[in-house]
Each structure stands twice: as C-alpha cells, then as structure tokens.
Length: 190
Image: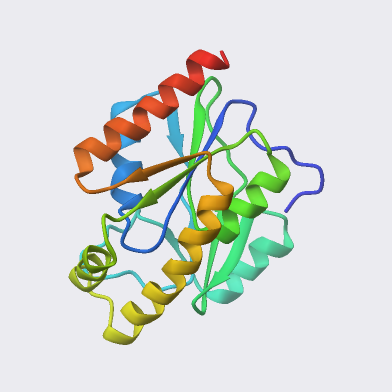
C-alpha cells in the first residue's frame, strides 16, 4: 500500500459480512440505484464460480497479485481461506463516495488508515440460510464448512468494528436499510 495514502476524499462506506450474507448483491443494487456511490472492484486469486459474472472481481493469478502488492497498488489486501483478495487504491471519479465490499481483515486495515470509514456489517438471517446460499452458489461441502467456521469469527469481529448491522433476510429491504444509513451519514456530515 502506498505510504501515507489516505484514500478517497469523499465518504468511505465499507460493507462487510460472512460469505453468504449477500454483500455482492447488496453492493450491486446500491450502486445501481445511487449514482453518487462508486463501487471499488476487488481483485482475487480464487477461480470464478459458475454463474459469476466476469466483472464480479478482477480474477488474476498469485504472481500478478503479488506484483501489484509490491507496487503499492492495493488499499488493503488479505489472504482468506488460501486465496488472496485485495482492494485497489480507489480511483473514483470526483464528487462520489466510495463503497468497498470486503472481508473483516480488509476492513480492519481500512479503518486503521481511514478511521472515518462507515463500516456496515451485513448478516444472513441464520446460519442455515447462510449454508443454503453457499451451497446454491456452488461452493463444495468442505468450502461451505470452512466458510461457516470462518463466518462465526467474522461476525464476532465485525460486531466490534462495524457502526451498523443489517440482516439480509430480503434483498430489497436490506438494500433500503443500507441506503438509509448512507443517506443519514451524508446528511449528518455534508
């Protein structure tokens, strides 16, 4: 990460939560509805899942990822369940707020650099629903088990870090609740 880089000049919203919480779906809906909200596209070394769009991440290999780390090209990055994930240094257009959809490790790095970041913890309604979502997206039984185990840690850590908590029991309702948090933040800190 570039030394001293403070991040985007606008507000910084960070959406975190365990696998299967629906972060990607909620983030996509938020940015589709709010032209003043820019979603940073993360990099990963994991393979693209069946049915996952090519632009869900920048899919890359470990060597190219580590070259970008060495060049200071990530705002945050982490090794998560044997895959690398990273948020590029944001290059948002002027006048917009930035939304990061990242894991707990990344959010901790971001908050260390940007204590003003608004962290929102997105949760599935239950572990059973979380399991169903992970299976439905094509995760192997072993990966589902590892995600659920890691998810419990992420929820506990996320509750210590996040300013807000939203349960994603219904996508439209969860999106509306997160959008309300963003709107309130903008009104309170113009």
